[in-house]
Length: 395
Image (cartoon, rainbow, N blue to C red; front, side):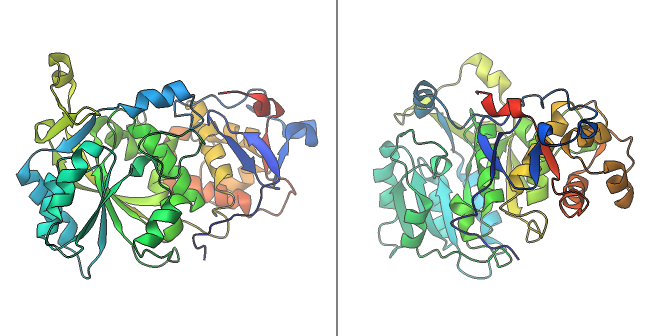
């Protein structure tokens, strides 16, 4: 059984994943097409996987600076705060630490404290910190307030952003949080609101952290309880029945986590503050565009990692999915011909999947079965292919 680890074995071959916006190291079971006989290059192998619209973590300083002043939304309704606090605490059997992301004016923080919860408030705006600290007065350590941004913790680039970057391996031990085996219980819960201008970027970053067991997931199956916008929620839980919304990251999140809808709330229960802590008034057009926010619970699955899907080869699984969804109208068999030299017709027949099925008709758990069936195949020394031309691609 896989457990979170600090260091992973070095990978042997460098490849830029299609549309990834990052470089990924593919394992020794991969090969360039020139390493194999031409008969293995079939189907879609003449073209590289299409780029997918998800964020490049190696941003330029100018892009990062724009994100520094991003307005944030906070709970403004006392009734909603009490509802959320009740939802989080109603199944509590033992005292469990809650990490609250960007609590702002602290309306939810106060409601959580009133239920007896122990809260660590990670606040990115200094403006709110003095008020948050007063909420913990006379509570004997029930509340800690720390100046940092959970969503920027353990960044995947070296560019410094404000507030000062805090690393999980510095924060968590100071809070008394120890790494747990992946099969153990939930070490802590995180509550917050995804940044409304960069929801997908944050979700992709968390995906890489989760599958690689790094950052906060180095400590075990961290449970996220987050408000998310309606459009991104619909994409997150999309299945083949919602083919227009169904995407690679829909599959990755559903494979990785059990996703529950806990509550739905209209935008009127939230306020937006600028980076200087001033309440921001929405323009008329912005008000018309606002939708409901969904409180979802994302609990990593105990059985996510197996002998054939691990924190070492997860990047190949990502590569497979992004390649497949790069051309959504193609048949699955055509994509697999382009991805692997293994007899994919035999693989699909073995796991009872029709070879003529299209990518958007494959369910998340079926994608995982396909990947694992290829990984455990012993017919070839190389199980996966990639294009040399992808190595020089700049994003």
